[in-house]
Structure formats: C-alpha cells, structure tokens
Image (cartoon, rainbow, N blue to C red; front, side, top):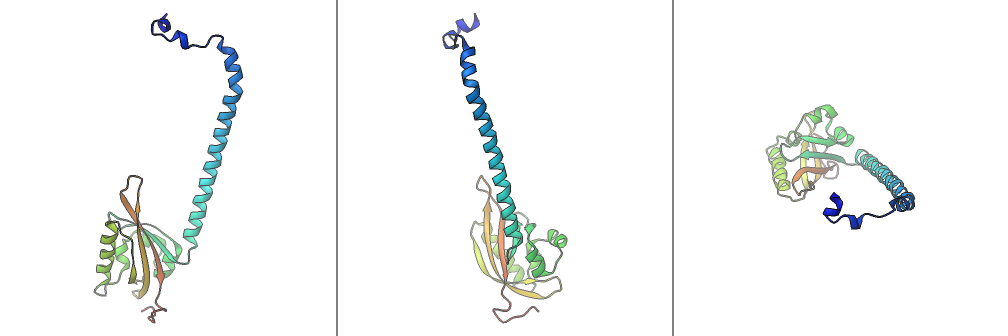
Length: 172
C-alpha cells in the first residue's frame, strides 16, 4: 500500500525473478571483471612504484626530497650518502641547510634556493656542499617544486651532481 500511495508500483517489475535470473550472469561477469581490473591496476601501480624506487635508488646522481615548511629531509638515495659521507640516519636528522658550507655564501645560497622554490619556481645552479669530514664539494643542483592534489607546495625534489672535477676543484 505504501508503494501505491507514492506512485512506485508502476515501476516495480512484475515477475521479476525471470529478469534477475537473466541478469545475474551479466552482473557477476561485471563484478568479476571489475575486480580483476582492480587487481590488475593495483599490480601495475605496485610495479610502477617499484620501478620508480629502483630508478631513484640507482640514479647516477644524488637525489633529495625536502619538506618546504621546515627544510627537513624526507627522502634521499644512496648517492647522497656517498657524495657527502653522512650515514642515512644522520641525513634524516638534518635539514637541507646543514649540507651547505659556511664559506660566507653557502648557507645564504641554500636559503635563497628554498625561497625561490617556495614561490613555485624551479631552480638550477652551482653550489658548494659540506661533506661530513668538513670538506666541500662543488655540485650542480636542480631543484623542482612538488605540489599536492590541491595545488599546495609540499616538498622539493633535487638532483645533485658532483662537478668538482669538471671545474678543476677537488674535494677540499
């Protein structure tokens, strides 16, 4: 009676069991294919993430991701460890400014790079970075801003290449 009073009765399929029996195989195929598709998509995503990690870790250049709010290190690869001589655990407790030398403009250069990237610009240039042993290494740095889904700047990603030998300056 309730259905009739709101006009729904005309939309209810009479003898619906036949319709359900005919539709059930198609619905099941759709569900199974959808689940298989989801599994394939998840598998492809895992494979992509693994490949990306492999590329990041085996890059010939040092890689570094930095939180834009406090300049803390989010991620780095083993090439940064090799380049600067810090342990992975030490790097995780540092800020990006800690890597630049105190030669009068190294820290200022790091802060200038951070300021430029915080404004959404990609930066590329040369700088000196401080090794754990106190020596300096000349590097080519390319820093890119990274934005989240809402367009907010969240981190920077850097590619750092040792250019000491190219410019004729050895590690000090």
